[in-house]
Amino acid sequence: MPVPNVFGNATASIPLSQLDVNFNTVATLGNASIGLGNTTTTVGNLTLTNVTLSSGTSNMTLGNTAVTIGSATTSVGNLALTNVTITTIQEPANVTATAANATVNMELLNNTILYLTSNATGNFTVNFRGTSTTALNNVMSNNTSVACTVLATQGNTAYYNSVVQVDGNTVTPKWQGGTAPTSGNASSIDSYTYVIIKTGSAAFTVLAAQTKFA
Image (tube, rainbow, N blue to C red):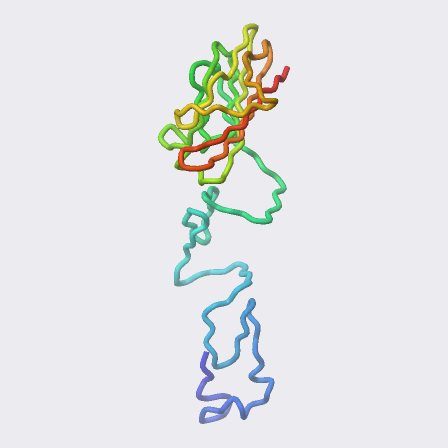
């Protein structure tokens, strides 16, 4: 900010060169050096505590979410984090008292684990999509991947995942061990794990594995 025209008992402006040299010592704010008579518009590496904004813009964009300073935001999308340490994490799981049969839709925008707690009643197709109205192809970028699990409860007669689809289009997975399963495991929970890799527009590579839990 400019130096006032009157300083102390002076009746006219006083050049900085005539003041004590320490009077014009540069101050450091964040990572910016600020001297009297200068205008500073950008300051970085600054931590503010208990701040009240009386004017100006109080919104910012984080990922694809508009965040208002002072408000609580619990969900942010399309955010890339680098060198992050996570101490506690929870993943959403859909636990539903339904049976594996016909087509099982795995909606990856809602959960990455689907637990079907009723006994399977037939061989089934697993179809991966974003939601019922959003294609996975429109959610994933090229050269990205997602991992997920389908847990199929089995009774005395067991069934298995016979077809894999992405957005309703059949994909031939690469199965662990090189051989696709031809049966389920009776009186157990069959865990199917999938890694879905988007290699291009509507082009996916799926790695799959079946594991018995009993």
